[in-house]
Length: 158
Ligand code: CA2
Image (cartoon, rainbow, N blue to C red; front, top):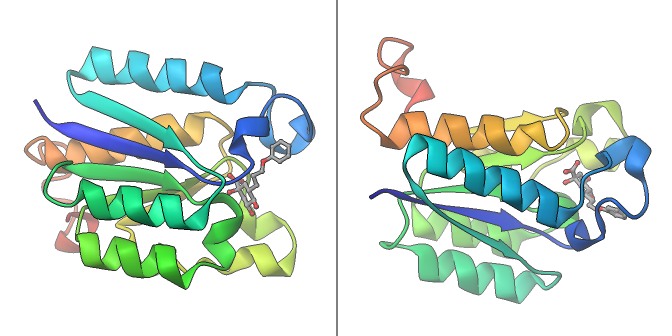
């Protein structure tokens, strides 16, 4: 069975408690439940991991090399700051989709820069918790024989 790792960055453990107008009402536990339900429906294994620590996320990405088939990552604030996470993603060479709950291009200037996006296959931003499902869907299509993605152009694929 294929395996997809979903990584949540710092402060995402606070979801549902504050800033609901930006990030939605769902808690991280509720989002993870939906992620697992989607994985079950499609027939792949999913592991979810959240950390508030840059180094722990880097270690998790390093450990994923050769073990997982794809990654979906919301690096949260590290999106805009972490060369370490970008370097880890580049070294892991795992097809990765970057996701954001909010549309980072409709917010402050500093959020419009993603250091990790150039390493990702693509970025999904602005669909609330559904961004994770869209990201997983894209990752799954890419690793599961590229059926639906076939014919859409090489750049779309891993
Ligand atoms: O929109 C996203 O998914 C972000 O990655 C979320 C990050 C933010 O720094 C990025 O610019 C965009 C912030 C996650 C913090 O989430 C909180 C949730 C509830 C209360 C406080 C923070």
